[in-house]
Image 1 (cartoon, one colour):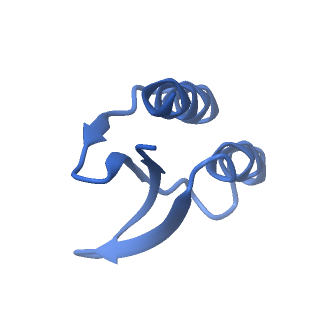
Image 2 (tube, rainbow, N blue to C red; image 1 turned 30 degrees about the vertical axis):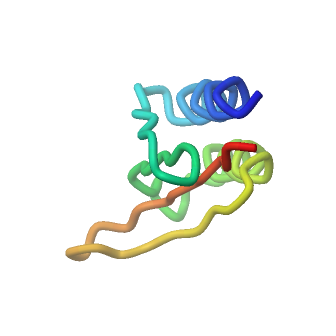
Image 3 (cartoon, one colour; image 1 turned 60 degrees about the vertical axis):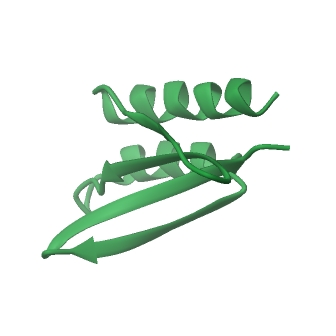
Length: 76
């Protein structure tokens, strides 16, 4: 179930970051955008990467000099 996968990803990202994460519905499925942790926070990055690998697509961007990480889960 796509929403179940997206909710599990959201929960894992919230656990890694220690803060709420918003899940957005898109025309293809669900998307999560989070602020990127500090580059020296290796534990958080390790936890984030473990969670992000469960997404169908993920990546990062630097919008307005604010590094962000995004992930998408497709509806199937």
